Amino acid sequence: MKCIKFKILLLLVLITSVISAKEYHVSVNGNDKNDGSVTNPFRTINFAAQLAVAGDVITVHAGTYRERINPARGGESDTKRIVYRAAWGEKVEIKGSEIITGWKKEKTGVWSVTIPNSFFGDYNPYRDSIFGDWFNNHGRIHHTGEVFLNGKSLYEKEILEKVISPVADQKIKDTEGSTFTWFCRSDNSSTTIWANFHQYNPNKELIEISVRPTVFYPSKPGLNYITISGFHISQAATQWGAPTAEQVGMIATHWNKGWIIENNVISDSKCSGITLGKERGTGHNVWSNDIGNVNNDGNIHYIEVTFRVLRNGWNKENTGSHIVRNNTIFNCEQTGICGSMGGAFCTVENNHIYNIWTKRQFSGAEIGGIKFHAAIDTQIRNNRIHSCGRGLWLDWMTQGTRVSSNLFYDNDMEDIFLEVNHGPFIVDNNILLSLVSLRTQSEGGAYLHNLITGVVQMWPDLNRFTPYFLPHSTDMRALTTILSGDDRFYNNIFVGPGDKTSRNNEYKHGLESYNKAKLPVWMSGNVYYNAAKPSDKDLNALNNSTFNPGVKLMAEGESGYLFLTYVQSFYNHQVQMITTELLGKAKISKAAFDNPDGTPLKIDMDFFGKKRSDSNLSAGPFENPGKGEIKLKVW
Image (cartoon, rainbow, N blue to C red; front, side, top):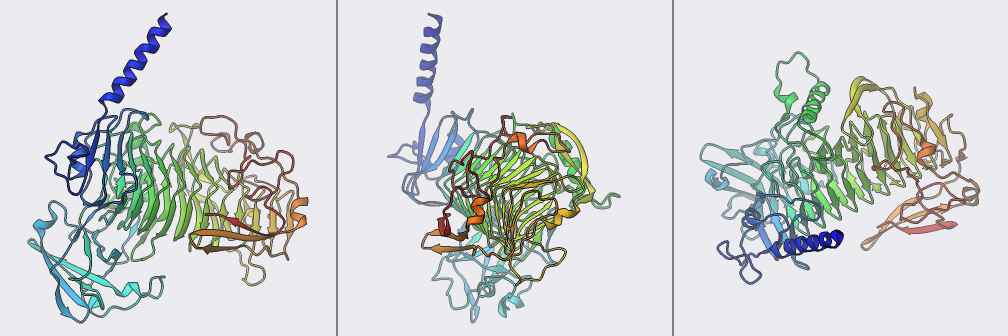
């Protein structure tokens, strides 16, 4: 009887919760004096954001909204969120920019406009410059603002003469676009922008300038369980997101927990698209601002920040556990997604990330399609990452992390860089097709069933002490250096360049670099083609140095196909199923290669999610791909 009464009470609570939840509507034709109903919608998203409480939904209808959303509250649980969503089937743009008209022609192609500083309110990105730890300005000022011609960003120049007489940058892909330039000058009352629009009359085109430092960002931590779904978000004047700083992208979680960021198109951030990172209270660009300190070492400063973050309650109960899925992210000059410690316990899946750091006007040590510090237990899977400098950069405290079934190509530095991590972490079933596939300055990794056509580099770091933790936790166990080794390579396919490319000590296809590993390594079941070479520590390698499988990636319409050839010797090469038991434990952290919940792991699914045979396994990311030349749809 008590059980029945409890169930009735629970049902009443659930019904009351559903009834009390509200749906607010927002429309470009609305008014913030309305009641927010579907027939009388609000005008601005941020107005609705000040009213919404846990369980509420904010539905935004078609149009362009030029505003910053600064939520007042978050949800209460994963089932009682605050949801921000674009109305089904409607295109909703949220921009960090404003339209600028009234341009004055200076000379052929060159125009100017003077804007009163009051236009910008409390933030003028044409007086604010990019700054932060590990940022390289290349000897000039870079403002956080940006100028757009019909949606395409122009290139800022440090002097007016380079706007009047632009010179194409031959070192980047967008050579022609680099001659569309702008320069700004600001005093206490106004800001003037000069731009070279070439043949375009800016008074007849869409000219926008970034004016907001973010688009969706709560000004305070503690707002959990928010969903952001279905928007087109662009053109914010974002600041450099160093791991030792408050990290503010166009969408930024601000040290909260349990957000879902899904089905959005995110583009044209001056620095980062999405940040899952640190807040300001534990330090903000502590290295750059610590002028005159006797210990001028960024490594020490980040260790100090890490301890402050731990004292501030960094753990799974308070932080991270975000889901970032099904987004398209492009044209950001620092990262598509980044996060320092706030990206722990997350899932990042099915995102298309490209054209990151393509203008190359500045650089720094925090650039990549995805750049995470401390991605503890984070799952990065089924993403397509290409046309970046670095594809995926996992830096410090990568433990319990799994990088699975991602497609990397056309990244001109490398596909994956693993920096000063002690593991365990797993890289499995990925396709890595760039000239450099993998660079690791880490130990305690397991590389399983990947297709790797680029260079593999491995080296130690004896000068930096970096943290490692108790399993599936932020409880720090200790700090130590990177000796190199303690890696596992099972069932991968390595494809070299044949004899067309000279080989030297640094750029090698295959696992030769592991001949110098200090710690033990485990290698078995790997396949080496076309002059890729195994390590002398590989126990069960198939080495066919003269065979070229002809790996190539081709786009056909909206889809992409991978072509490669398999021969009979590949199928005769039997390999073993990879499990937690086989992989053992990482030497330094003494933690197992298992699932985030601590259960044993089995690599029994391929790149496509197809079940692997327990008895007839083959190397590489594809289960039973077929014989001869095959064609696989990879997006």
